Image (tube, rainbow, N blue to C red; front, side):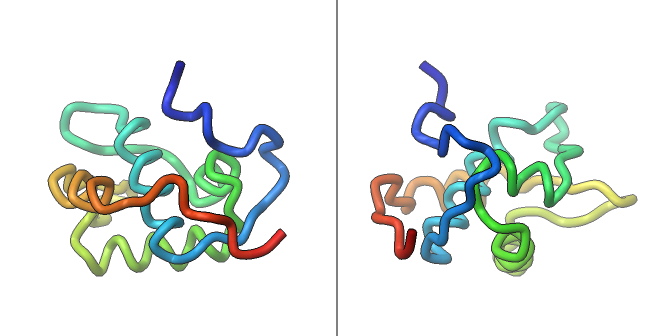
Length: 102
């Protein structure tokens, strides 16, 4: 079983989660999809939206929050992940948090 088993099955269906829950979802996807050992990923905000079931605007706000927390930086139009910060976010994440709406 993969870590994606608890994500929405309909990738085009979006949900409204709390900001902390959204940060956990996005952090998990970033860590799972990091394409190199250097911690870079080529996922777009739209890709993250489809993978998490979050609205694009929520993903955008969540990424801004994660960047402010030091979870990643942008270098030459790519995200360079700070895995230590992302793991800290995941440790405090509550994956069974209820959906706020829908």
